[in-house]
Image (tube, rainbow, N blue to C red; front, side):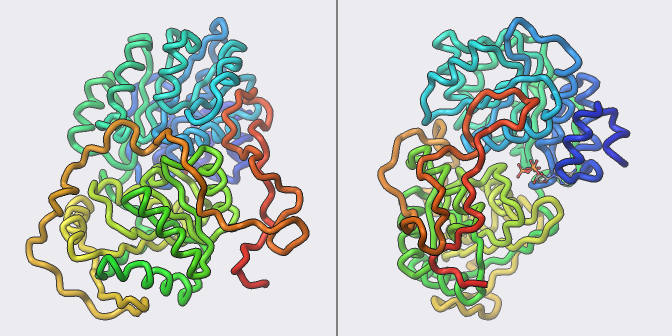
Length: 465
Ligand SMILES: Nc1ncnc2c1ncn2[C@@H]1O[C@H](COP(=O)(O)OP(=O)(O)OP(=O)(O)O)[C@@H](O)[C@H]1O
């Protein structure tokens, strides 16, 4: 079915065509008509299947058809991390390119004053993380009384223990008459029940079994002791010549340590987590996306929604203790129909997590032996009835754990060379803002600060070609 059949206005159809989309993905084909009708939607589809456009396109269409309300925002999109909020805002800018709508992205870790100025000038669409938006509301700067549509991206995460208190406070500031759009690749049972209390007679749009992984992602699990994981990972990366690898660790400290160790093994790596400064977070993600570094070591801050084009490898250095997080982590690869590989390094005390993941996915993942030198062996003998380690049985993540707001010191970013040396764009300035600049911009222009151009840079340890 072509996009034109969905009844989208020519400006939006042109923006979609400019992105190279030829036809709507299944979630888009099902959700867009329901949203255009004004219905509440509970949307579920596998990772990387175009959920952002599924809610953004009809949202933009509806806003462009109704009137600007006294500079007050009419649509609110909430996302769990700053990186995801920035990415969704970029999509709003791209898809709304030909429309006379104004949007802005608000998150913590950056100066609040420019955000206040944007609100005072007037906006149609706010994309935000909940904490900073609440702050803006409590200062009397953000008025949510004219919101017509609320979108919760990564809805199950937004409604779980880490965010629910802020979400409840924000809901009280919204008109009761509004459209609610909830989207995620996973819905834990308890969270779905809560979602049902907020949604009004929703259309449930599900295009694949709930909580399933994308078929294009090959999943492998290797049995290896915790203390041998690092050497095995380095060997896998080097021997397999993996060029772009997203590695998930359980803790921020573990992410820092692993990035440092990989760098000392000659593999360029940086860490991204909630204790890093906003600048360091943006740089690490951008350096990874542009292949300036080979490995990004992340906590679950990067598990949800982040879209890295053609990412070939995701590694779970440690398994997550919440099985849904596994689905989101490995969903960073195998997006938009592309193939990808997800590798989990499983120590004996993590086997119980593997069992929980298999239960959620309703499928078995073969566990193979792996040597500290990265040699893959035969099928590993599994522990009968493995128990979860006592300390990690809690699933509570605490408020905003994934979007921590402390400013971290330093980073594991590889040293840049001075201009003129190989691997360096002499025009690049450290500290320049990438596309995630939370600026308010008319949607009708190609807004957002330009990405620093690092395409020509070659990381220090990468061969010439
Ligand atoms: N109709 C389409 N045709 C081709 N590519 C598309 C289409 N819609 C979206 N995409 C591309 O697919 C990729 C994944 O889209 P998106 O980030 O919205 O996925 P998602 O379903 O929200 O994933 P996640 O569950 O991880 O958040 C993006 O790069 C997007 O540009």
